[in-house]
Amino acid sequence: MIEPRHAAPLLALALAPLMTGIINRTKAFFAGRQGPPLLQAYFDLWKLLRKGAVYSRATTWVFRAGPMVGVATGAAALLIVPLGGEPALLAFPGDILLLAGLLALARFFIIAAALDTGSAFEGMGASREAQFSALAEPALLLSLAALARLTGGLSLSDLFRDITPAAWVENGPALALAAAALVIVFLAENARIPVDDPNTHLELTMIHEVMVLDHGGPDFAYVLYGAALKLWVLGALVIGVLVPWRGPNPWANLAAVVAGLFVLSVAVGVVESCMARLRLLRVPQLLTVAGVFAALAIILLRR
Image (cartoon, rainbow, N blue to C red; front, side):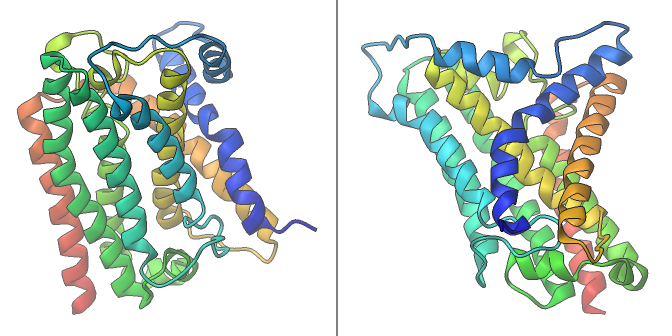
């Protein structure tokens, strides 16, 4: 019989695009519109996969590798991120650094693919992505370091297994700061408001979307699917801290985490419906705040 820890990556591969659909439907509800179907992301992926791809003669293999590396790193991250308190398929001391490295590798290839086009416009977006990632990655690592300090483990599976309601009662302020930092990183890494608007068409304010303008057909499908996997992976970290409930049934625990991810998607839609995107000059300040929150969590845990 299949175990929950084996089913978790398969569920992620199947349900990750659904998070995007939930976000879009929530935004449509707040705007008074019917909005796209809940499964629109799947329809888009299927349509793009059936199309052909057109490549500029100025591009090299780097341009083609960017989207595929994004999907591969997202799928690899699913193997080390635990769900529902169950250990991940690949759990070992130091996999925290592997997760950060996989996210950084995906970002590097997307930036390199944008630069490979030779477009100054895409180079502008790549420059912004590199600048903001230099602030988001330390905040992510410091948040995970705070959780490692609390639990005494160096594996993601150990971290999220030991984050329980009792841990919240004993170290609530520190966990709240770490969770706040993870939420900010979650929004920034996934190009969501208030850091970036995934639906914008204003050239001077685009960050992530401007880097993938030249991708089309299956390549753009890989970009969208890789982004959905990244949304799931980082969302699982947030839910792992905010939903520490652990019951005797591992399947119920897994279902609770999946439900939490869908609730998080609704929350993202609410945030994007109720607030505007920050000015570009304010984004580094927000990411710096995330790093400060994570550092304060570590300080509180050292007392």
